[in-house]
Length: 171
Image (cartoon, rainbow, N blue to C red):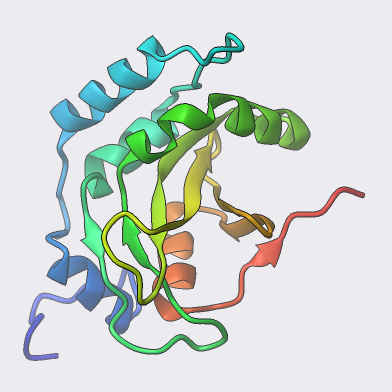
């Protein structure tokens, strides 16, 4: 791929290209930004007294991919891909929602960012992205909660390629 001669094998070609276009490169690590976000999330308390969980998997994801605005390179394979903004403060006011999901999944959940509607304008959030203590990634929208992958790499591939995620169900 001429625009991205340093493509890695970590991600599929289209995902790698979208990440590089957004400013990511192997070795990217902004721990200061991640720590500022961690501090802001820890300091926030919802009106009902709910607090955000902050844990290593979240901080590592924020350090490597934080602040990126990722635009899918084309139509999705199974669903329309959404543009992504990886900023955990997009979920700042969802401490209770994320806490409830974490309790249902028997883990801690932290905000990761948001999906933006495919043809939307800036700020047209379609879903909130979240990560659990094991590094699994989820999407929460008005239709339900979705499992995007066992780690952030799989989740980014699912989202950028427009793969159908698995719906979380109670059983």
